[in-house]
Image (cartoon, rainbow, N blue to C red; front, side, top):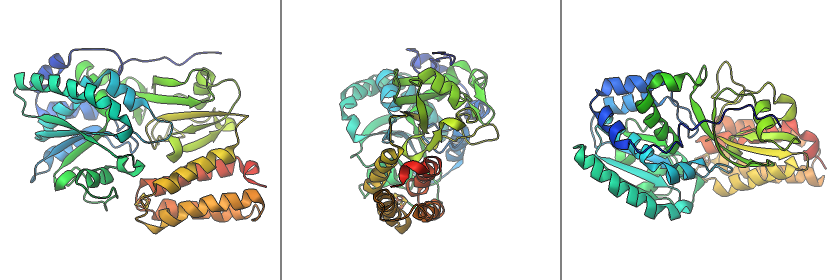
Length: 392
Ligand code: SF4
C-alpha cells in the first residue's frame, strides 16, 4: 500500500510554551493579531467554515453587553473523535487561543462547552485550567475559563442551541440574525470556535500566518485533523494537508476494497469509488469537490457493507436527534426513514425514491438549522450513488 500523504504534527506536537506564545502575542496590537488570522486563511474546523479572523474582528467591533469566548467541544457527529484527543493531549493550546481571543474582543469570561459523554476529561481539564489561570494572573490578563458540561444532545453542537442550553433552556436553534458575534450567549457578543480551530490559532500565533497558509490549497488553507474509521486497517486521528484527492486518502487508509467514503459524518456526503479521483478534500471552493460540513470525519466502507444499512443508521440518528422545533426536519426525517424501509420491503416502487429525494431537497431549503438542512447530503448522495442497494 502506497502511503503518500504526509502526516503533520502542528496540532499534536507537544509544545509547552503557552507562556511564551501568550506573552509574545499580548505585546502585539489587536489589529496585528487579527490580521495574522485573516491572512492565514484559517476557517472554522467545526463545520461551517466561517473565516476565524473575521469572526474575531466582528466580535471585537461589537459593543454593548459583556462578551464571551466559547470553545465548542460538543463533538457529537458520528465518526468524529478528534476534539477529544486535542483536549486530552494539548489543552493548553486551546486555552491560549481562547485567552488571546479574549484580549482581542475584550472578554473576561470563557467556557469550554464539553460534550456530556466526555465527562471523564473534566478532572484533567480543570487541573489544566487552574494552572492556566495562574499564568494569566502573571500576565495580568483578566480572563477566566470554566467548563460547561452538555447533556448528550447532538443539536447542542449548533452554536445557538448551545447558548440556549447554557442559559438553562431546551437546546433549540435560534433564528439568525442576530449572529453570535453580535448577540450570542446571554445576548452578549460571543466568539464561539471549535476546539481544533482554537488549537490552530496557537500555531498561527507561534509560527506566523505564512507557515499555515503554505499548507493546503486555495480556499482551504492549512492542515486538518481527520477522524478515520470504518473499513481501515489504521483507524485513528491524523493531521493532513487540505487538498488531497479522496483516491490518495483511500490509498493510504483503505483496506484495498473501499467502495465509498462518507466525508463529514452523517451530515456529510457519501462519495462512491468512481468519484474518488475527482474529489478533492477541502472547503467548498473552485478547487474542491466536497466541502467538509462537519469536523473531518472520514468513514470508509468496503464492498461487504450494505449502503442501505448505512443510510438507515444515519436516518435513525437524525430522527432521534432532531429537536422537533420545525416541521420539515421533525416530519421529514421520519418520512425519509419510513420511505426507504417501504421501498426496501417492496411496499413502494423504486420510483418512490424520486419523491424521497425531492423531500430531502425541500428539507435542505426549508429546515431551520444545519441539522435538517444537511440530512439531504447523506440521503441524496447515498440514494443517487447506490440506488440498486435501496431497492427490494
Ligand atoms: Fe430542530 Fe431539525 Fe428544525 Fe434544526 S432543522 S431546528 S434540529 S427540527
